Image 1 (cartoon, rainbow, N blue to C red):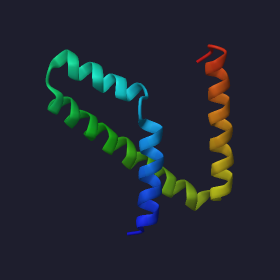
Image 2: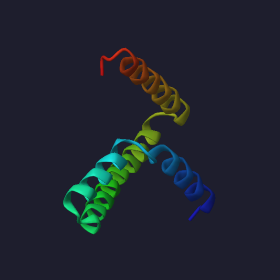
Image 3: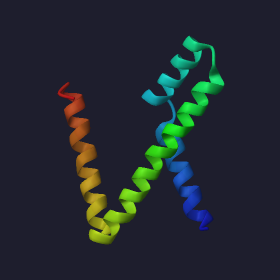
Length: 90
């Protein structure tokens, strides 16, 4: 276990995920249903599955494509999505 990588992943994800749409969904579901533990369990299960899929996809892609290329493609797509959202096309 590389604790430096664990800390980097934790720090990046916690900052990226705070106050985004998934947090708002959890907040609204918890207040609407009155069952915060059930909402928490469903949320944790969903995050685990999504994270597992992205880690497996990343491990597969880095075997086929250089990490630098993945970083540039990811940055390009991120900017494109931002532009589309800015102009209301997404």
